[in-house]
Amino acid sequence: MNAPLNHPLPLLDLDLLRTFVAIAETGSFTTAASAVFRTPSAVSMQIKRLEELLGRPVFVRDARSVSLTIDGEMLLGYARRLLALNREAVSKFIMPDISGVVRLGSPDDFGERVLPHVLKRFAQSHPSVAVDVVIDQSSNLQRRLADRTLDMAILTCRGTTPPSGGEILLTEPIVWAGAKGGCAHMREPLPVSIWEEGCAWREGALTALGRDGRNYRVAYMSAHTAGQRAAILADLAIAPLPKTFIGDELVELGHKDGLPEIGEYSLGMVVAAEPSAPVRAAADHVRAAFEAFKETGSF
Image 1 (spheres, rainbow, N blue to C red):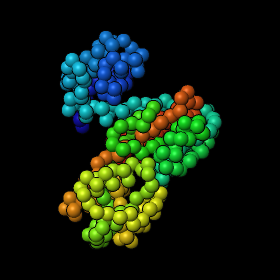
Image 2 (image 1 turned 120 degrees about the vertical axis):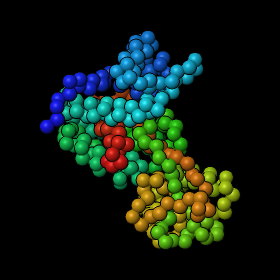
Image 3 (image 1 turned 180 degrees about the vertical axis):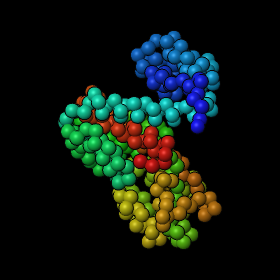
Image 4 (image 1 turned 90 degrees about the vertical axis):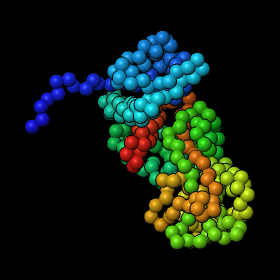
């Protein structure tokens, strides 16, 4: 039998973590202070308390910038997860009777892989809220947001820059996907499966091929992930896909196969101004789903 701890571990204050995340995301104590409705001096005191609690510095400060230490980077993942879980837990008690409609836009890949899990959990905690889902290309979803025909949208973004007025949910590498045992990547010109202008994966892939001077042709076009997979599995072409899409009958191709590195893409979320209570609750569930994915690797 284990002896009880004489000195139990301290509890992390969620208010301190909220300020810590705000600084990490904005890179500024002053900007973060406005976001959490505190003075810069109060924010500085909060971070001092957090560092004293953990016994480690979480930020490196100089006259022009603020950056995370190695310990701060580790804490950031835990902090986001704890805050998301807090929002989800509290919503079950203070917002269980919310009713209304949420108009949610999503690209095909997110809608197929993640949205069913998010909507299932959301329906369990908010059974009186209906979610109207629109699947479309990110550029079209942005227009729908501008026209106020959507309340919120998940968008694919090139690199790590968040969408205008939005936030980043996940960043991951884009890689070349081919069929196991396939030879499409050996052909000249290189057969590539992509979609139309505005696709972040397309932009990254074609930029990389142009930079590498690789001769290619567009052999297949599809707006849907299932269509892209079909072209790859038939060995008609290779395609740029997120690294997490690789598995089963697909393989990741790279420098050893004569292909250039593509770079990263991000999934961002934009919520319309002055969102209703159902929209705020849905946005929190999306954030919680991605924070869980970062911790566990699954939705």
